[in-house]
Amino acid sequence: MLHDNHGRRIDYLRLSVTDRCDMRCAYCMPEGFKGYEEPSLWLSFDEIERVVAAFAHLGVQRLRLTGGEPLLRLGLAGLARRLSALPGISDLSLSTNATQLARQAEGLREAGIKRLNVSLDSLDRERFAAITRRDALPAVLNGLAAAKAAGFSPIKINMVVMAGVNDQEIDAMADYCFEQRFILRLIETMPVGSTGRSTGFMTIGPIQERLRARLGLIDGLIPGGGPARYLVSPDGRFSVGFITPLSQHFCDSCNRVRLGVDGMLYPCLGDNGRLDLRSLLRYGCSDPELESALIEGVRRKPLRHEFTEEPGKIVRFMSSTGG
Image 1 (cartoon, rainbow, N blue to C red):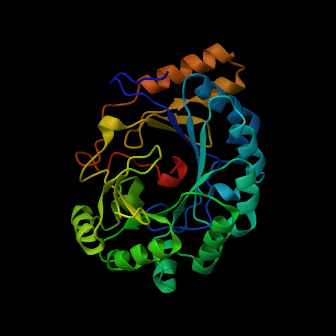
Image 2 (image 1 turned 45 degrees about the horizontal axis):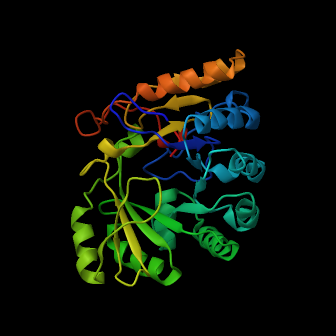
Image 3 (image 1 turned 30 degrees about the horizontal axis):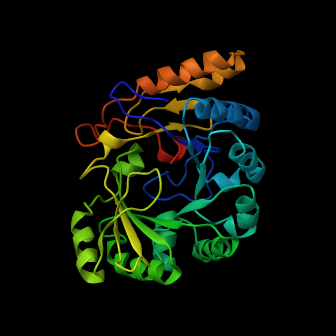
């Protein structure tokens, strides 16, 4: 099993399959961003499968496909089918903005993806367009309907809470998720890149207590490998999670690393340390050499991020890291 130098077991890999995105969310990527990697620098499907197989051999069980927007990577269902068949991978999930989901949902579910996280920061069409810089809310809602029909479960809605932007919509989003049987997750903005630092941060602790009182929620647990703390309705019909990387960080229990589409392994989202796996793969490393590199990369994982102490530390954008 993989452990870092602080005794944490690492059993969760977030894998970026593309740095492209068809949105320009205000907290994630500049509107005119053009700093994409050349596709020749992306890991091929064969290279991705080899790295994931090595991680699985070392005890990683959970795998999440991310981007950018992963549904923009051609042949994603085929890759998912290959990864879900690897020995040791017991949980394959996907993060998406759902704009392309309506036509791909059935194929992705058949390929072995079980769970979905969908980014949705507003149900108001004008506000959604202002946040994402794209008028795509109908496409997202159609994608969610297709995902329900295809049998994904659970479907989690990720709402990044921004002061003065969408914080007044939280109750409406909770009602929507209750009606649709989705799990709502409220997320604090993180100072990743200039876009993340320029977004209105607000702590969501008070929101948690307000929703607890308004909806009669109690503390609960929801299966998954992420850091959310959950409140649930007593009858189990509704759940809301809270991801608080700044106001109540969860570094002590962090169990994940990230792999960028360019083959860079990031042990911590809030640290600039990385390990170049692409060069290692293309120089013809053996499987034992690859596994040794993964062990070394995980050992480099810091004890915690320094978002509060050094908010300007991370200059890369979230879309290039793997969500």
